[in-house]
Image (cartoon, rainbow, N blue to C red; front, side):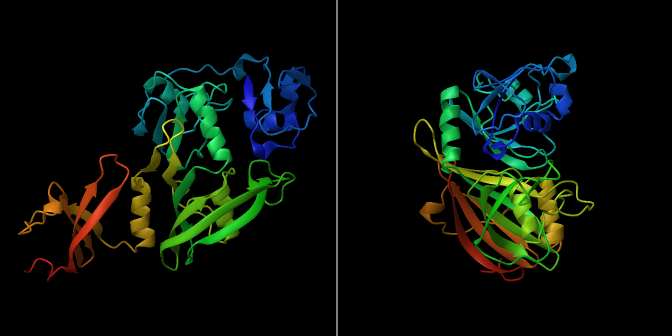
Length: 357
């Protein structure tokens, strides 16, 4: 088995890290030869970022056999070099000792003919999302592209935007949070500032809507630490709704966090990429109930006709947005590259007046 060491594990003992990643006891590694970058090392070896750790576990139960599985996935974008997937809720990104199948990697092996294989059991995977976090994740189809994307992530050249529901009233714009976080000294399953291996984490929170109980926010992350948004939300005393680890237990099915937008330069053709995916239905429903106070909000095709329609509006869909007793009639044009949307507001008025001449 081969594992590449992320920056968050730098400075930690190799046996402790392998025990955590593989969810096995440290004693399971007794009598197992562990090599780092091709050389045999002791269990007390302190890891460095990008170290390549190789070992073979003796027990057959620890074997992971990658198999393609016909699991439906939402492919938002694809070309010959990369793909962007809208990951669903309750899906682990790659196999591990505890989750050997039904992962995103198993699905990718079924849907794509070629994937990068730089790291064992992580075919195509350049970055990760938590099991319960939905949204966009980039897939590399070749090792060359994989390495370019890794470099872009390391240099913060890929902008990541999330949508989240926080507990409590949080009403701030462009609020920058900068902390040093890592694996907690006492509980290795969580991330905190109480760590022996702190790494800088930077997030920018902007409120989109709020009330006294919940807030809808946009979060731009400038670094990509494990559980970063969840930890920073807790730091604000406004943990994610549904986060039962960093917040409090409730009846919300999962943490309300969605990877909404990725913006980057294509690693091969240098084309500007701005990819957006819709908020999942469960979050939409929670936004409606918790943040918007269950107001009746929807968007439907407008059936009426607009006389003397300007030339620019040809071939555009006419839509009606209903917000309680308020109405907006508007048009949307999507550019051919599917990356930009333009909206043209025709009229905005009360329900009683908007359809009048």
